[in-house]
Amino acid sequence: MRYKTHTCGELNLAHVGHTVTLAGWVHRRRDHGGVIFIDLRDRFGITQIVINPAYTTEDTFRLGESLRNEYVIQVVGQVCKRPEGMENPKLATGEIEVIVSKLEVLNPSKTPPFVLNDDSIEQDESVRLRYRYLDLRRERMARNLLIRHRFVKFIRDYLDARGFLEVETPILFKSTPEGAREYLVPSRVHPGCFYALPQSPQQLKQLLMVAGVERYFQIARCFRDEDQRADRQPEFTQLDLEMSFVDRDDVLEVVEGLLTEFTERFADLHGKRLMFKPFLRLSFEEVMERFGRDKPDLRYGMELFDVSEAMRGTSFVPFQAQHVKGLVATGCAHFTRKQTDELTEFAKKNGARGLIVLWHDEDGYRNSGAGAKLSDAEKQAIMTISGSKPGDLVLLAADDDRMALNEALGELRHELGLRLKLGDPDAMAFLWVLDFPMFSYDKAEQRWVANHHLFTAPQDEDLPLLETDPGRVKGKQYDLVCNGYEVAGGSIRIHRRDVQERVMRLLGLSLEEAYKKFGHMLEAFEYGAPPHGGIAPGVDRLTMLYAGAPNLREVIAFPKNQQAADTMLGIPSSVSEKQLRELHIKLDLES
Image (cartoon, rainbow, N blue to C red):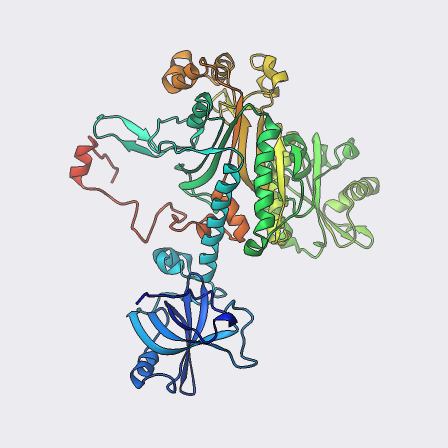
């Protein structure tokens, strides 16, 4: 006999009268006056089964009395319509039940270390990760895996229909330590030499363009030895995508079309809707001026306002800096001094010199603190420019460094958005950020560094500035932002050897170093490399947003914790001396 004739999610009124075989886990057990009701669960849903002594043997009924949550069972029974008024509209199978004639326990279960059948109960994440194989049985986690599966399958189908070729690239790669820290893999057959796990397939996908693939993609595994946070994992998955003979808009249109169609077609699964269609497009400069962050959450306003000119000649010392900007927290004039002090400390930790707080009441700005030191004309100017209303809280900061000021206020805006829960949880607010500065100057190392990576092409009109004024060079880079997260980043690439060498020289790479690290790229560019560009949307991060999950760990089957460890498997772990000797490695650890 087969274990199942049907899943626990497919039976309906059309099956009434049929004899079926089901198998799954006991999700919930209820004993009502000598009749046992079991919610039987598998990945596809829940079916109510009924063990009634009138329709089965005494032994079967006694076996039913022994069942507990998470037992694995098989039942044979007849599908019946539920009694009038006993239907469950929350279940796809809620109009029927299965009257059991046969029951077999396939495997009993110990009592789980946490509740599996009620997602409303918050569970300790450390325990959930320790017993991840149980955690994944929970409805919310099963749904997250389904969203991820549908997303990845949709990506493959969408790109295949548009002429893209899926190509796998190596996991063992060459160390290129200019980016994030890498994971190194020692070579047994080449003593003292190492592979690196790829931070991304960047160089290989460009070489595929030289190879004439033209439209490539890969659901790529990537690795970075970074400090962990909610939207990071040491190993992650991205949609790696590259195209030949394209400009920026060609790349953007492919990704925007993919995400638009997925969002709309699978709305019943993830419950999200697009806030902007088409996606917004703003320059990096405009984004920083308006929102102070290059990955702003646009589900709410709270834009930065500028009162620098209005404060010229002020006697209020903090506002005598070159730039004075602020934001309005709508309806937050009820904040206490303690709360505003916390916001001030937060702003300072993010680079602000301090924070000036103005409470707006029916008579204007409350005449206390900074409000008492500003002139009536200055307060009126702030009120007019900011657009604040009675009941609002106005937060201002000043600095001679405009970028530092924008960034500090941008982080404050983001923090307020989180504290006040301003973002619509059902909205996906996509934004393209364009025209990034290509380089920034590292004062500590006294050299120019690439803001994206060294294969990003400068904008054509800025090529003459590479040697004369690198700080003014803008790159052909683009980021896709959604709800406060960067969800994709890419660029049009350099495809000419002479331009690539100029960029490498600017970044302090000698010709010898360039050949040692990237000789394969420079050589390939001499063999008819086409113009090309690409992008890498984060599969984990986008799935996290579609699932409404608080962090990446919720949408990865077996993630690492905040310390980059897997407590279920007990890794990272030590290895034997024999293994170390085979790899020609000797440990020298501090005690």
